[in-house]
Length: 174
Image (tube, rainbow, N blue to C red; front, side, top):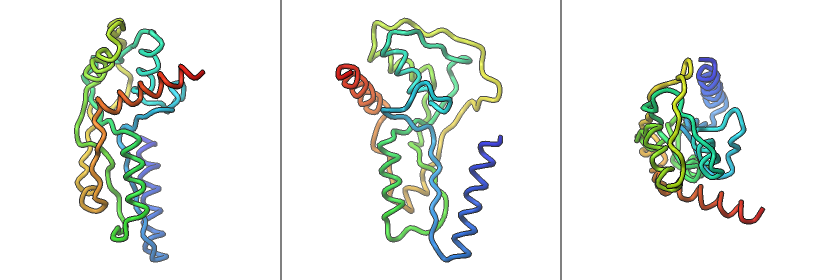
């Protein structure tokens, strides 16, 4: 779609700058990023921030489709580390690399993790699948590993536990 075309166009523009002005440009392709302080009401918000907000406030969760669609969820903490590596590594050359975990998780499995954190939560309801939704997304982070030395450290369980802890702290302070 247009989103992917715009991202590819920006990468091509950077490649042009790189060759024209002899500067290194690194494009990082983030997969499904999650972390604290993501606004669950934003149109760009990911499923984790929406689910986290709803589970924390005791509201029901709706899964669109059968819940077997998968995503490669990566913590914003890992994203920040990848950015630092790309900006500071002396041996980096121009190019594009996926920033991902290399593991896919279904939406149903994501809900199960949240249900372990919030055992009193009601079961999700299922709605009609969204038109044009990508069913499966999983990245190959080999290039980021090889060129940047990037490896994801934050597991989905640890990442969600951190997210919930920050939410609980912010709720207690407000």
